[in-house]
Length: 87
Image: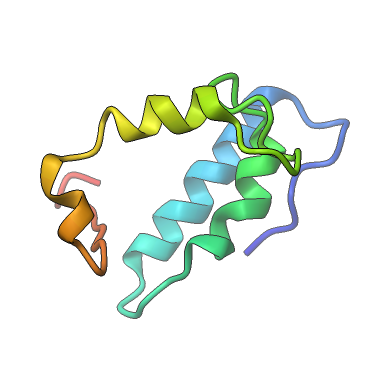
């Protein structure tokens, strides 16, 4: 995985790195940990997760994400992500 973007990177480059990072990981055949996406996520500077680098919980981002989860998520032990054949 590439190093996270530096302060000189534009938002576009940071987002491109983030997309390349998770796309590459989804193409692998093994299990990946969410932690492996953290640096690319932080570097992206998401407007949906403005407090990503802070120690406190970003309640706005948490609520945004939780509202989009399926009702059965509380019974899940593992989430499997993948790509469609189209990419």
